[in-house]
Every structure is written in structure tokens, then in C-alpha cells.
Image 1 (tube, rainbow, N blue to C red):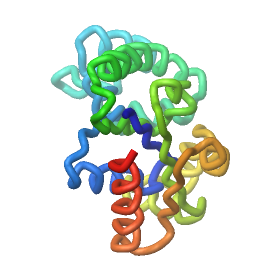
Image 2: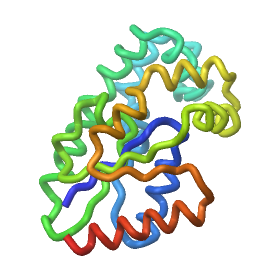
Image 3: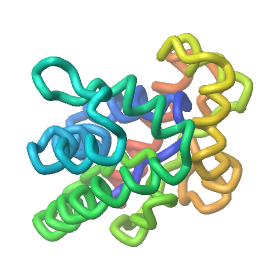
Length: 194
């Protein structure tokens, strides 16, 4: 069974993902796949042609912070970046789905699951939800972003309440880590029983 795991930035999705991993479930992380794709020589070339050579360090590698800042300040640049990365990421996930046995639970951790129209790859979808003010505070604290950049990043994603409406399972991350772990454990047990 393929379970899609999504949420907004700083909703706690990675924490939920790590909890499932702790229970022995294989996680395919879209961010890691996208990072690998963006580090390929041909991808670096295409990205730096669009964003400028100033996003590269002295070794010719992409400085993620510089890329991120430029991408989220300009929607057209973000779309161009997505055109380079998304098709390759999509191919990777399609292959993983084909390789998966129906009895095994495999989690596709995809922050932009709905935005990338990848929900069709999943049998069930879990959305991790959080209050938007808490989300902004977490982005600022975690990434050292300004409040404005945090809001811009969040506004470039599908609103969390829309994702929640589309979900099969919702985990509200509005309490302590122990409470979150309890919720994840309960869902893990339910998934194992199916």
C-alpha cells in the first residue's frame, strides 16, 4: 500500500515521517529525491542558466539558500525550476510504486503532493495540519527566514485547510511531541490492520 504523506512547510510532516520510519516503514522522501536530481550536472547547468551563476558556490554546486530566496521571490522562476526538477522526481516515484508489493506499506513523503498532482500514486493520503501562525513562527525559527519570506513560501503552497479536506487521514500537530507520537502510533496500527 502506498501512503502519501503531506502537509505545509513546518507543519511537522518530517517529524511524522521520522516516527513512521522508527516503526520500520520505508519512507521515500521527495525533498531528498529533488535534491539528488538538482545536484546532477545537467540540472545544475539548466538551473544556473535560469537563476544566474551567483547561486553557485566556488565548486559549482548550488547554494540552496540563494536558490530558494530567488525562487520564492519570483513565481515565474519557481515554475521554471519546477519544470526541471518535477518530471525527474515524478519518474522516480512511479518506479517506486511499480516496485512496491501490495502487502507492504510504503510512505511517499511529498510536501507538494497535491500541487504536483501526484496524489494518484497513493492509495491513502495523510495530511499533517497546523495552525498558520504556528507555521510561520516555525519557518522563521527553523530556517532563519524573515516573517515575510515565510508568508511568501506558505502562500506558494496550497492552503493547508484545502489539503485537509482532500485527505483520507488528518494528523493535527497542535500539541506536544508525545501527543503527536501517540497519534502516529494509532494510525500506524490502523494501516497495519488493512
